[in-house]
Image (cartoon, rainbow, N blue to C red):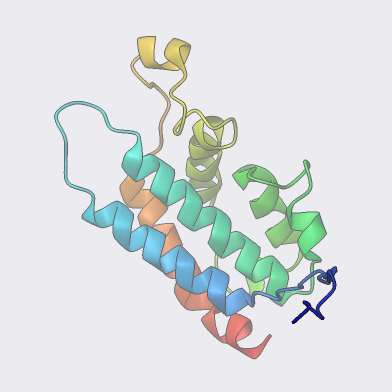
Length: 160
């Protein structure tokens, strides 16, 4: 009996996944919890700083998504992983109506950004390591800001 099946070519269509602001907010909370659960090591560890940075990036992006900022803008070189730029964009979009952002918050976000944005917490920058990783923020301040941020924008993200 002859094979009656010929070759078949399948052309899959692109899949578009719309991840909600609540997903970003939820993941932010999980990264923050992981940062706090990281066991203390001997000497310096970039892990808690990186996880706080990632949690902050996702929380700020959750707010911007809830405000209607397009995803492509969040992936742009101008915003991307730049915590300082993301916070500035959030302030332009009215984050101050949901949360009081202090100069201390801005300073600590900026200090974290100096390591987070250039990926120096993932791929340790030797020059910064030799300087003892000076200039890192106080994670208690960053964590408290994140706690307040997550709580203050939950309803907005849930409604988006």
